[in-house]
Amino acid sequence: MDAPYAGYNVLDKWDSPSFDAPTRAVLDERTRMIPARRFLSEGQWQLVEALVARLLPQPERAEPIPITPWIDDMLCTNRGEGFRHDDVPPAPQAWRTGLAAIDAEAHARHGTSFAALAPPVQDALLTAIAAGQADAALWHGLPAQRFFTDLLLKTAAGIYYAHPAAWSEIGFGGPASPRGYVRLGFDQRDPWEAKERP
Image (tube, rainbow, N blue to C red; front, top):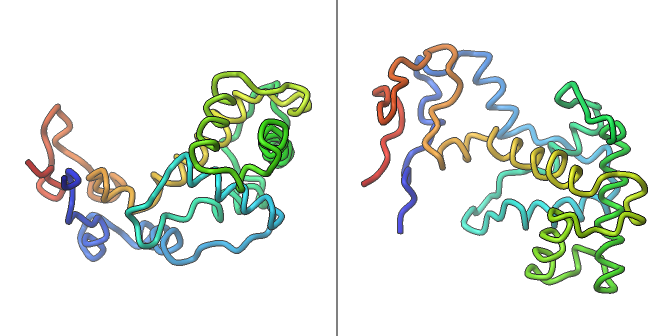
């Protein structure tokens, strides 16, 4: 079965009034200037790659949307949403603690690292953490559910859906600036927006 927006590529609008120079610069950075590893250790990087592969699998993509490099960049530059919950330490510390705890959970339950587990076992472990069934002693005061939902999942999904390939997948036409959107009602679209396949 075809995807609803198969054949649509938001980057086909590159030279149209939909994108201006600042928008093109941001898109160029997102698609071509992938940051190198600077914050995560090699082991942490591989763990994040394994986590992202379960949270946002991309088996159909020849070139998956890069997520781990942008998480690493966010942590290296200490850039975030501008707030944090009072029971969560600053992002760099929270990520180091949370990643170590996920691997510790994998070792405690299965005797090996998270990355070495079979995908169904990885899924079961993440489901348990999301459901509040983590061993609090392994998390050293970091709320496991909050780390999973508010840091790991939310950050990975935010990075994924900031990429033009994901925009094309969901039929999103890109930023409202500079062109803007006029037809905002239900089941309406502007002529330059993607049309869903029947």
